[in-house]
Image (cartoon, rainbow, N blue to C red; front, side, top):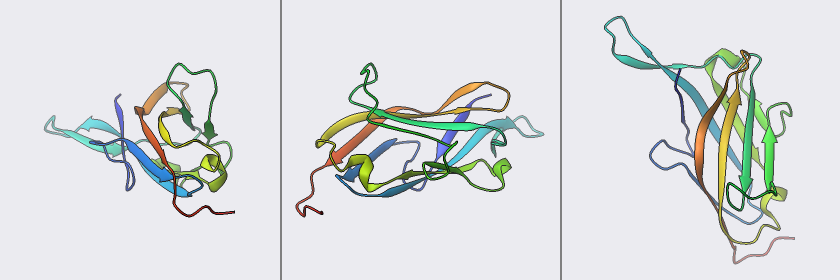
Length: 139
């Protein structure tokens, strides 16, 4: 079962996030799988997220020991699986404090889902997360 992602903020062709230090952002995910229709043509169908856990991680580089941002769907304030979970939709909530003191630069992130069956699947493979320095410095 291949699982892919689509989003209003992240697209399949460009899995990147760009935001300013201290900026808040909601990332909408629709987790789908390719399933052949009656004619054998692959079609995308939502993955049932009932009992699943979604993980978001950002690091300096993939092998870096320090996790700069780590979120999971066991905390609705971090990642929210949208009701009903069988529609495969989730929202990753990035808040101001996630990047407020992060130096400007390019980092890496990925998103994984652990399905209720225990199967772990990358939803967004390693991608670029850019933190930009704003002109206005907020308190």
